[in-house]
Length: 236
Image (tube, rainbow, N blue to C red; front, top):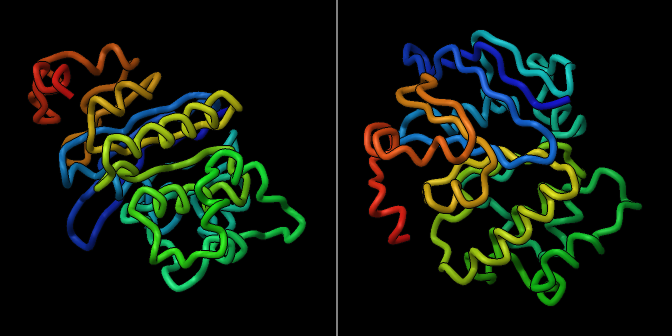
């Protein structure tokens, strides 16, 4: 039981963006997908969700091949996606944002509001007037409305102040403890290594490393493929 990508190839026109990529996201674990800008991380997430069509390979959700399914079908089957840039509905309230993606009108939002109490306070406030951190919480809450088995997050910490990262980390750890599998693309490498139990590093669309979180801390790996030095990791 896991979310698996096997031998994935994705093209943008003539550009081969992802090459023969295989990764696995087990339930109850946070898996980091790391790489420099342009390495193919966002492309991989979009291929898993069906926003982009893979040119080769398999995408398996708990053993079921969903590679030909439409994005909304993949979402119903258990894949939640928080895109880079949040993309909440700016002119809708917090409550309306959540209602807009709720497939079953009987589904309660109480558990989400308990996880993100600030959203309960801002329920009647338009999303466009929220702070960046509050919008990120709303984007995650919206993805959780379909009760996904696996949650894909693309750079969730972008533009957030350090104090805002605390409730974000708490929420991800809680979801992990409840059995959700999380695939985390994150520009802040120390944050990703703090949260992740395992990870993958890709460079120019190809897998260059796979292992547990400890193995990702190798100085040579950080410098060569992520442009991060061990001294910077400690400073952060």
